[in-house]
Image 1: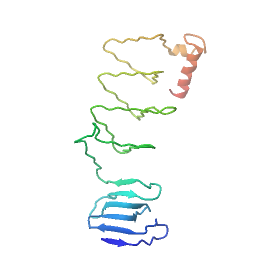
Image 2: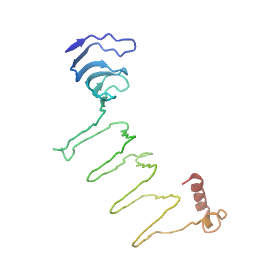
Image 3: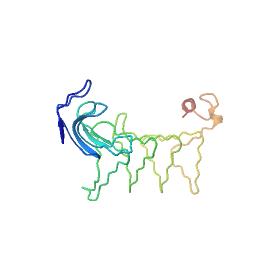
Image 4: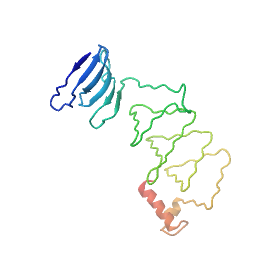
Length: 208
């Protein structure tokens, strides 16, 4: 066991009392500052031998921008196994009282696999939405697909193919098809109203 009174160098976070216990493989640190000057109240880390560039540690940060944070660095796999005896059918909880939760896998894939999956957005006044952006394809396969909207449903595409091997049924109050010949007439003339012409023009100019 090594215990020292800290004499910080210029620019280093002040630590009035350090304590650490190490072996050649790993150690526990109390009141130490990392290379980026982040003070850890408690840190458990691997020392040697290590074939990784990234450090392997668990730290409780004290002070700085991330004061009160728990920082974990795992150069290999970070794995959590739980749920042998769930409480009220709950095996795991990740609760963020404020702020966002970001999950990034820039060179990998994110998979969600379960008996059922719910995506629920509860916000209001500019929030409460679910956004999906895909650079190449957005594929959906299901036994049944049901889409309900209290307001509008809009589909925009360069080419749209609809293939139905059975019955295709439309139950609508009114139905209008705007073809190219209708669109290229003067506004307010032909088979479409001025409002329909303007909306179609806006989609063409705005790309959808």
